[in-house]
Image 1 (cartoon, rainbow, N blue to C red):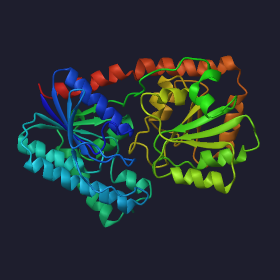
Image 2: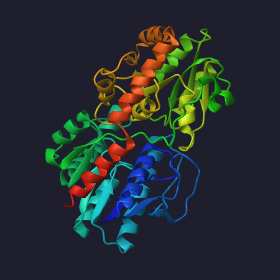
Image 3: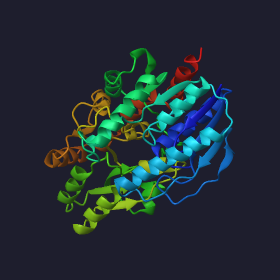
Image 4: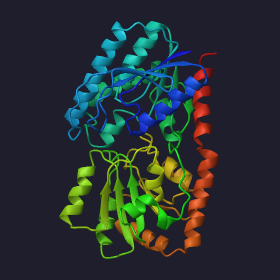
Length: 404
């Protein structure tokens, strides 16, 4: 097949969508398919500028120039998204392509509409890989008002894409339910969670971990939030717990990565003069298994009202790398579905700071053997359920079968 993937982010961007699309594109090439990716010339959360056209591991990458305003304000983010969609449309109109399958995602929002239109012109199959649901997620995050003209307009566009897509990839049962409610045909949906993207596994001694040594974690119990600090990751409960535990020398709260909420963490740390909070930049994919291994517990956050609209996938990578999980979010979600089958991971609701502290203190009191069992069970579960090879193969089969 000749396959076209449309996305604002692609390797070497560190965003989750970028990493998963890169894995999928390269797996499709390994299966004998011809794959082109159209993406942005700018790094998603960096000042990087990429070449206009090149070949990467068999994938042909074309990049279009769009606005690159800082993403601190919603308006600037929206302008970046809009300009990417406009230049994407121009690229498709003037380019000479013959494709059998077009894959669109939700990054940026509604670029899938352009991909859908192009697929119809080409008489190709269109697959919509749903990473989040809009405008529901923007409404739940407080970025737009539910009854606004913007929300209504986005809802119409979203419904159109969902109903007209030949194939939809959903990430969990909650998301699948919402897609069906919005007009998707159940037979057109494949429910496949995203896979861990770690390129290695650190199995050395905790005290000898290079990231731990470099950042002088010493023998602290390190609670780490690693990845994009997005609007959909409310960190207030975790920060409040750090403040209340500032005099307990056992705990250290580590925030690795960037995003719109990074400044919130920095401001909180400085305002309260908290030495038990440390911050680090994004780690490269080739070595972030080492930074994650430097933690004793990995944090997964899902905002209230966002279940089914977004899908924090940090849980897969953390479990695959053998880390206990601290989940902060609604009682019923894809994360609680997973952790309900395992023991001694920590689950709390937003704003329940005292409960979080109580559970952290209880976990810290476990013996090293007991903590190791939690980590081992998590890794075993993830290896069986969320192996990259297993889930990538499911994705490829779903795409190939739709062509038969």
